[in-house]
Amino acid sequence: MSWFESFVLGLVQGLTEFLPISSSAHLRLTAAFAGWHDPGAAFTAITQIGTETAVLIYFRKDISRIVSAWFRSLTNASMRGDHDAQMGWLVIVGSIPIGVLGVTFKDQIEGPFRDLRLIATTLIVMGIVLGIADRLAARDEAGGKHRAVRERKSLKELGIRDGLIFGFCQALALIPGVSRSGATISGGLLMGYTREAAARYSFLLAIPAVLASGLFELKDASEGGHVSWGPTIFATFIAFGVGYAVISWFMKFITTKSFMPFVIYRVLLGILLFVLVSAGVLSPHAGESAG
Image: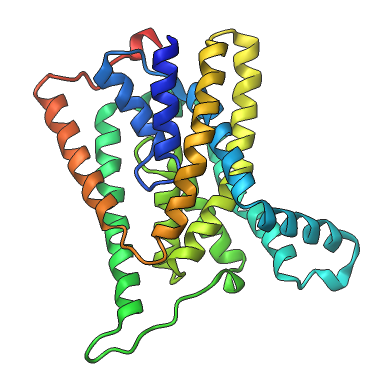
């Protein structure tokens, strides 16, 4: 991997990680369109450490409060009813599905799941799901002529059942094209949570999974020697800087705006991808042979 490729891919990772459009799909597609080798699941996981560091800094007050309350609840029974302490447990519980499924389907994630036809399918299908969830949320928020405004749930109403559902939604993002934030936010909206609550829990829930995945790939890559370390670290720093700016913008955007621009983009990109593969312009396995 060249330094220019790492710069572009780091930029793509930072721009797309927090938007509901799938960073892993865009890394894969950027390489395919440019005629580069597929950067691979290891590169994606390692550069996500950069974007998750941006989450740690952006949500540092929330994270510090949750971690502190969770540790105190281990020895202080009176703290176990505290919302922040409960959030600590809910993040742990919600991280179980992606951990189990990530290990179980590791070979598929690094191989067959990166087929461009599958990516096109997930872009379209999850785009439609996000559109439906967004429309339901908008209907609740706006009410109507014969329908009162419906109060949506906050994170204070999050329990074990919903936490696990969020976790299984996040696990879908193991398939490129699904989008971690897109799947968890869609799940949250369909369960009746506000846009802000769904997005906030989505980002908090991603921290253990992404950091664990990145560290696992770091260890694996160190032993296997199949990662270009200089360009990969450079891309990780680029992803961090761009990712912090994007998450700051996105959290403000979702409080007043619809997700429909992302829905339209996903569907159009998926259709374009199908057309290019069907026409023979792109191979569904473009770049894979060289890793």
